Structures are given as C-alpha cells and as structure tokens.
Length: 226
Image 1 (cartoon, rainbow, N blue to C red):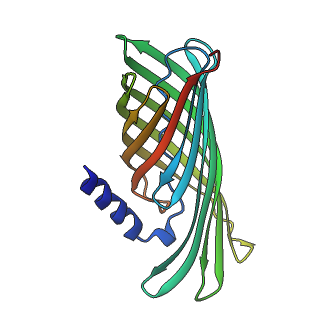
Image 2 (image 1 turned 180 degrees about the vertical axis):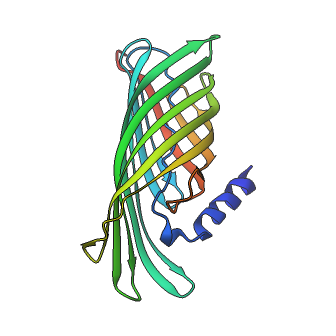
C-alpha cells in the first residue's frame, strides 16, 4: 500500500504541474451520525495544504467547508516556474446513518479560487480566477477506531477571468470533472490519521488539471454538546 501511494505521489508531481490550473480538492467525508457532531481535518495533498470542517446542524442536515493552498517552485524542461493555487468552498447536505455503523451522505456546494504561473525565464505571469459548483455523494463504515469508504464528486469549473502580465485576455471557459475517492481514517475515538486517494477526469478536456489526488492528514471529531 505504501509503495502504491508513493508511486501515485511521484507521478502526480512529475506531470507538467506548472501548467495545471485546476487542483482537485480532497473529499470532505465526515460520515456524521448525529446533531452537533463536528469534524476538523488538516493535512497535505501533494505539495499543497488543506483544511476541512463539517458540522451536523440537525439530525440529518449538515454544513461543511474547506480550503486548499499551493505554492511551489518547479523546473520543467529547463524552464523555471513559481506556481500557486488557492481555493475555498462551502457546501450543505444530508447524512443518513443506517445499519448501525454505515453512513451515507450527499452534499451540494460551490467555491472560488485563483491560480498563478510565473514563468521565471521570461518574467511572464499568468493568473486565472475560477468558480466551481459540485455534487458529492459518499458512503462508508464508521467505527470507534476506523472509518473507511468511497466518495464520488462531480465538479463544474468556470475560469471567468484570465490575465497575462495584468492584461485581461478576455477568455472564459468551462469544464467538468468526475472524481472518485477512497478514504481511510485510523486511530482513537476522536483523533485519527486519515488517507485519501482518488482520480480526477476531465469530461471536456478544456482546463489543464492534476489527474491524481493523494492526501495524508489528521482528523479530529467530537460532539459540541460534550
């Protein structure tokens, strides 16, 4: 398992990362079971950092949000780049505990972000602002020391502003991404180490994107009333 995760991470970092505009977010999969339950998770996704949170507002309705931050110096084919990506998202949805330790969830959300690629050799800076809408469905097992399951996201991304050296190119374009995930959390009742692995597949091949999602982080889950 460790060799597979290492291989995916290496492949992710080697494939033209200076040209990626869209870096998929992790799947926020708290598998909530009751009102006032809160989950906070933070970790690393490739060379980027992420933070997510979820809250059970009622016995079946929940809110969640998260953000990702990437800043990286890369060299490709003798060309040097400074690349960055920042995005945040919010979602609302429903969770359905059944069969004791099995939970299903659905979320609808959206977000905003910006990406940049500074070509050092030519001193050319390109920035893009984008928005996204997404649907996520997930199902999994949630025990005292183990949480595991699968999630699927459909993400609609719109690049609504692109600038080169501060000059608006006038371009605006859309793409849709299909993203299946596997997730696993192991540890104590409240504190766990969490791992995610997934794929991102463009439906229209319009936007440059990172095709793999590999994340390792820390997860803290508790009841607000306790």
